[in-house]
Amino acid sequence: MLLVVDVGNSQTVLGLYDGERLAAHWRFTTARNRTVDELRMLFRAMLELDGFSEKDVTGVAVCSVVPAVTAALRTAAAELAQDSFVVVEPGVRTGMPIHIDNPREVGADRVVNAVAARHRYGAPVVSVDFGTSTNFDVVGPEGDYLGGAIAPGLAIATDALISGTAALRKVEYVPPRSPIGKGTVEAIQSGALYGHAGLVDGIVGRIVSELGGEVTVVATGGLAPTIVPHCATVDIVDEFLTLDGLRLVYDLNHGPSP
Image (cartoon, rainbow, N blue to C red; front, side, top):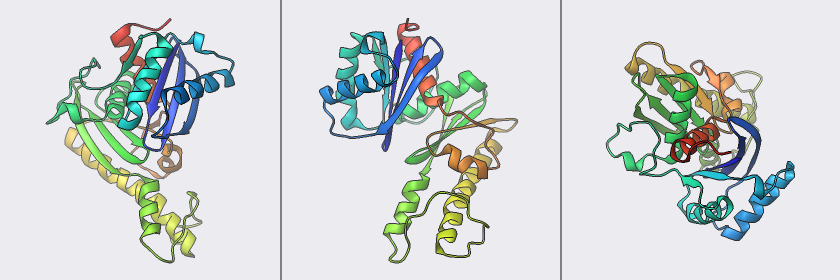
């Protein structure tokens, strides 16, 4: 079975694939100072939580946007999968031409999302990943990666608002009774949710206008279910887009994991 590991700035998501089927998945907080032994213990605990063991893992695929975690993960993956692993980084085959000024600087998660979006929904396609940042990644009509946009995520934008003001406070990310907030809490909720949805629609609208024709827009990431209901331009929510992209990249480099 294939263990895939998506390390984000705030959260890490694990997935266990049996062929093309996602058999189990787990999510936990990203910690930048975990050792190799701690990662192995964490993997073992997550697997055992759903009745699996380390012996079931025959391959590992990793994408990480946190360099401090990547080195320890590389060692842990090599030990767990007996060197049958891939870390998505420059030089790894993805099957997707990267047409930006410096292909080596594009984040691994963005490439993986683009690979999965093209595979699942065809081209052209735009993936919108709602995480610490909100990432927009564009696959052109010929199936190549064209670039995209990076915006502050919902949580980090709201945190900046709260930390920069004396009287405002954190709120739950739920829709207010009306876009016209009747109090401070509802006003923040309106600005946060509808403001971020407007940001998404504005950027997607400009991207689609530049591409021309019909473009599929797929959303993923932990905050997608919170924001997408208020967006007008997103067609699909695919919770496991990044995990599936990791599976595809692993298969391209090592062949399907048994």
